[in-house]
Image (cartoon, rainbow, N blue to C red; front, side, top):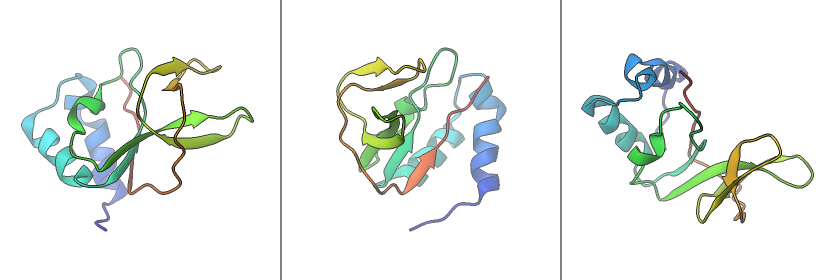
Length: 110
C-alpha cells in the first residue's frame, strides 16, 4: 500500500486550484494516481465545496461517512440516493457499512 505524507495531501487540499473550484490536469492526475484501485472514503460536497467526486472514477470502492441512529460516525459504500442527516450533511439513504478504507480524502473548504 502506498503511503503519502500528510504534507502532500494538505498541499493538494489547500491548493489555489481547489479553492477556485477548478482542477488543473496535474491535480486530476495526482488524484487518479492515489485513488486507483483503492477503497476511498470522502465527503459529499456541499454548497460551495469543490466536487472531488467527479475526479475519483478509478477507485475500487467509493465510500463516505454517515451518522447512524446512535449518533456514531461510520463509513458506508457510496451508492443510491442521498439524504441530509440531522446535522444537515448529505449521506447515503441506505447504508452498506464498510470497516476498512485505503485512503480518506477530507473535504476542502472555500
